[in-house]
Length: 521
Image (spheres, helix red, strand yellow):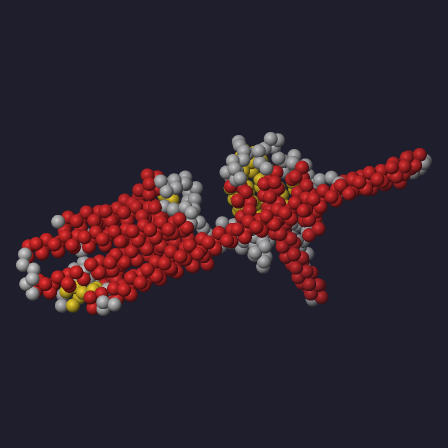
């Protein structure tokens, strides 16, 4: 009966273990589809049939095969090597058959290994408490108080089965509860981690794995060919070791919770900064409108005087040249009231006018092309959202061109110094002109999707690292800058869209895709 219970419990535990693996790692990874590039496969979520069955099958069968290799001499080196092979095969399996961001894969793998090991040793500690009953019944057997030996052996077998059941229940409860809590903290998302964040999250898991490896080395020793646990030799460890394991478990659990809360606070801070930028944009819109309105009122007030001058010049003979000059000046004044482009949206016309004047002030001589910036009639996208996307995109482009212009001035200055020294030395030099910064904005419709593209020249420097979704700002004040692309992404998600960027040959291109019909806010 005892052997039958062990076999049944092994099947149950290994199946449950594989199910926990699929539920946890399936929150961060996706089954790789053959013939698809990484990152482009269909997202199957945590569906068991679509995403989880390979994890469950692999881990259940793999653990069952390893369990057939029974250890009799408790060789610590062999035990450690076997553990490394078991979890190393899991890492290889996940890397080959599943895809996801590298940071998410490492975090899910290390956390699963750490929680699995802690749960196993906590279950073993719980079993050690139950073994004390054997110590209580042994004196009774030696003193002859237990007369029915057959009944006693039957009781021992039943009690051993109960201990195994309790031990496995402790393992499953701790394993499932901890992994479920960690997965819930991330909200079912597939996050990306920067290098520092990944180190913060992996450190507790590595500490727990090392502690469990140490316990595996010293917990069981062989004395006179008889295995003896450290709990039997030092009874106080039955309290100390579980306490240490619980602390390691809390370290893994609360480090993930702390990270998620800090990330949430950081996102809330970014949202407040985005709102501040939106308010600043509205103030700029109001100032631009007020500027145009004040000029209109001024020209209306002066129109009679202007017409009187024109009529006077027209009535004089030989004043044709002076009249043409005066009319040209009047036309230039009228042009100042016009917008640099006509997009089909009054809000975007005003925004482009604001950004155009801003870039002309910051970067004299910049080339700005917006002839292809056209908003289709009847497009069901909020003008405010379009203004937010275009405004943040142009802000980043202006920042890049401004930095490029500054570098160009420094380079031109150094070339001038070099040329002067070359002339003084009697040598020849060639004067090279710096590239003119430029920004190009265009839009297009494909079926029901609206595409906005912003391309600009830049100096070739990007603050980007592996696993980072968007390049960060190169400015020192990262709290007030570098959130534009995040704001664009959040706005694009409202319209079932996305954001893509690439750089090549000193050109940075930002592409935003939006569905033409708003689906929610």
